[in-house]
Image: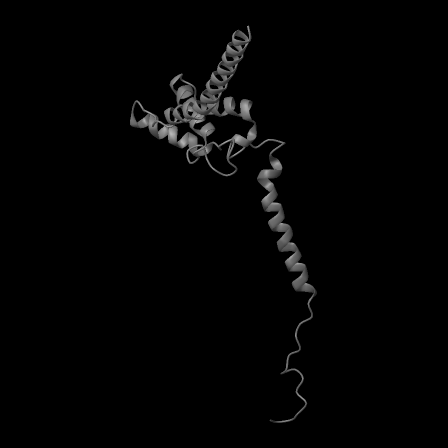
Length: 163
């Protein structure tokens, strides 16, 4: 009887060891599959003609990568930028105009996705803010220059001595 219990105990240990090995093997294989999917996304886009390619590049230069701070969709190597470039091309092929594609992306990601946000009440400060700051700085400099006393002119204070 003890031999049967001993045999069953060893079998459970073997099953547990095999299960653990299988779980570890699956966990280690997952990054390899993810990398293969990322490389598939990185495949170059195929354009139907030169006009489609020119339109695509012009449009992706006007759009900002939603993950990167100051890179256009065309310049970014982030995975989401690769996916968005593919999506932009699909939307172009569905017949959407550049404005419709931009509106679609703004609905999904907000105004941040546009390098040149629309001139609206919420973005008015973005458009006129730099000019206001520049004019205010020029006004401060002009006020400081006017308040300075003119330097004493040595020719005006001639006391009759020759040197």
